[in-house]
Length: 181
Image 1 (tube, rainbow, N blue to C red):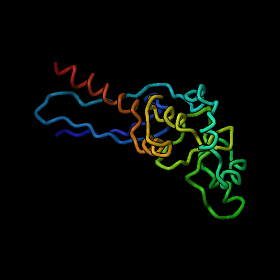
Image 2 (image 1 turned 135 degrees about the vertical axis):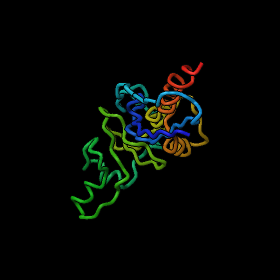
Image 3 (image 1 turned 120 degrees about the horizontal axis):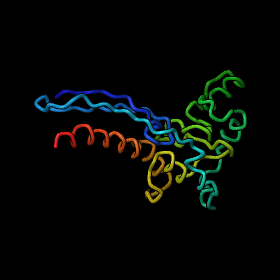
Image 4 (image 1 turned 60 degrees about the vertical axis):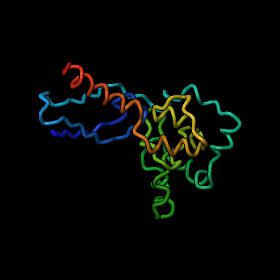
């Protein structure tokens, strides 16, 4: 095989999330084809733009996204989108770096990388994000169902964003499969 290695940012694929992933693409050595060129040129979509129409919460979402004690203590001491999470605020106040995984997002930028933990916080309200917001930020369809919201957030956080995978697959198809016909 002739392998190629690519570092791709999901935001360049139209995913409202800054998530870098490595892709390995390879052809058998006996196939004559030019090297693959992955050129992702989609405009970046902000977290606010992607979730604009899902900001009115249902009663169940209000309960599910209720801020934890740590949120009530540190969210107001953070700046949206500074990328450092609660860690910057805790270091300034206590000298200890805690809460580094908890990030207050910026609605004018694509979200930070969504993880399997429920670590993203809303930009304008002291609360967790809803599963509807997670699905939008992860480029999952609105009708994606999960057994629970917690499992749904975990699945979105663990996945390669579908729109990102689609962008890579389209270029493989266009450059290697369709040209081989």
